[in-house]
Length: 195
Image 1 (cartoon, helix red, strand yellow):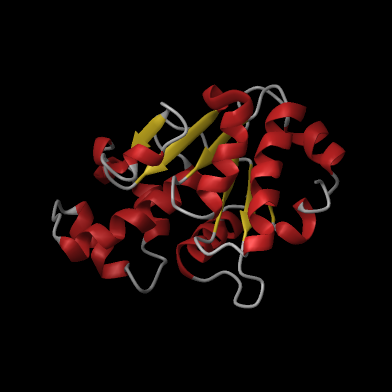
Image 2 (cartoon, rainbow, N blue to C red):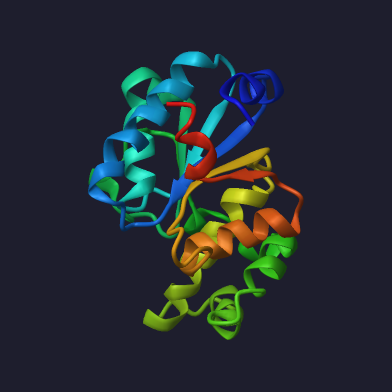
């Protein structure tokens, strides 16, 4: 996919594109993530960009978008106070404010993460202890892709992954939810060519 292919296919009203990835970004790649966020916001008119507001790739992509148009950036966070000082936008959607019991598809796909499967059940039942809160991050990652009753589903995921150990952790879970729900993805092997 070229940058022009991306623009032609996705720059329409109502489209949500994920910009996210690993917390550990190679130092030589950091500016490229900011540059991509900036480039996409400059070259498109309609796309809403979605992130998880995590340190690393999420923050770098978001910084680039926000430099051009912070109103086209939204973040989905696992709880109300998550990295509040580090948000580049006022469009913040917290898992705390969602009726997660009513989000059956989100719960189903969150439970596909084997490491947190039982914790998702605890979280959904209302438990908010330290262990159950680990599930909030996986639920957040699922919502970023699937949306919710108030958020639209993502149309494409643009990721910065660890290419030596791909699709691990929360980023890996998010990528798997994309795959399971036929949401196309590209990683830095594709989008770095756009810069």
